[in-house]
Image 1 (cartoon, rainbow, N blue to C red):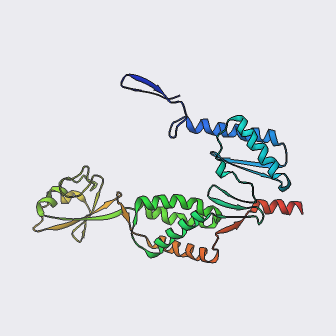
Image 2 (cartoon, rainbow, N blue to C red; image 1 turned 90 degrees about the vertical axis):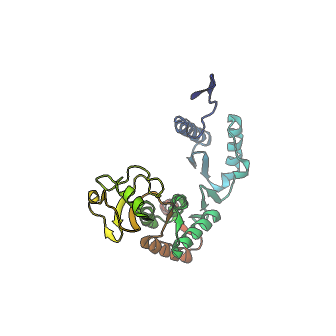
Image 3 (cartoon, helix red, strand yellow; image 1 turned 60 degrees about the vertical axis):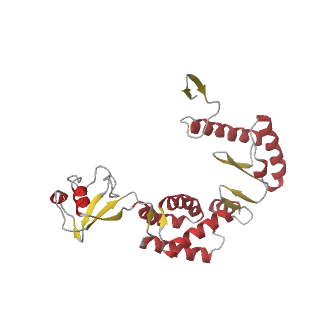
Length: 279
């Protein structure tokens, strides 16, 4: 358990809260124990999956309600907290943001995920600037979306490259401030600390002096320009990103995929294999 002290009082966490080092271990072992108990209870003729706290149990259609009632009573006896509004007995269920259609052996995106996917692709197609944090969140959500279309997963690399690529920041200032900034350069052309009054931050690397390539940074230390000049710095701390050409190309391809397949569905291969084996 985790303890912490505040104002001379020692406190102990009574639950495995999110972020604690032991939480993942505790809940993964608890989930594994629950699945093993389900196997013992139901015996043969079922498949059980669990992801964190989301349980999916596949049974024969003739046994669906009997098994559902048995599991509900069993979990209640164990004292497991149940989200009753999420319980569902159907051949078409929503699981982990995916829509499983066991009758037609397809898996697709639920409406919320599909709308998010389309909105994000539309923004990329427009080619406008995107907030870096928003792009990062959208890429994380797209990892779920490409589950239904594995051939699209390699194209995610264009978005990750767009997210992590350095940008170019320009600073135009008086000769005195340009001189002060250049005197802060390291031998590698990196600014080791923030330069007050210039907007230049620690970690930026000099790339251009005016229209000229900076080259060896040491030759610019002590330089005093005759008039207002501009410096171009490579930076990794941009808040807004320009959609790259590769990201735009990928977005156009995904737009076509969504147009050809509005429900973004694919066949459940493992169910197909089972059906072939039975035949």
